[in-house]
Image (cartoon, rainbow, N blue to C red; front, top):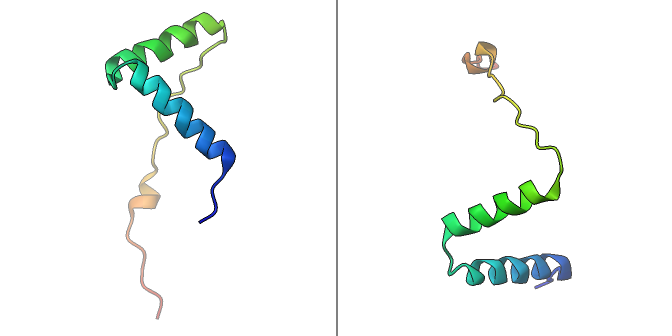
Length: 63
């Protein structure tokens, strides 16, 4: 089976990060937020996309 070196590296980094926080998701998330705030980059939160009713209407089967 073919393996991508970049994907494997990402998996190793992710595993090391999780292990350093004893696999505690709350602690990992707090660390990500701290790093995000320290980066100084502007964070944009977009409103959720709305779904039009047209996509929810049943379609007529083709004959």
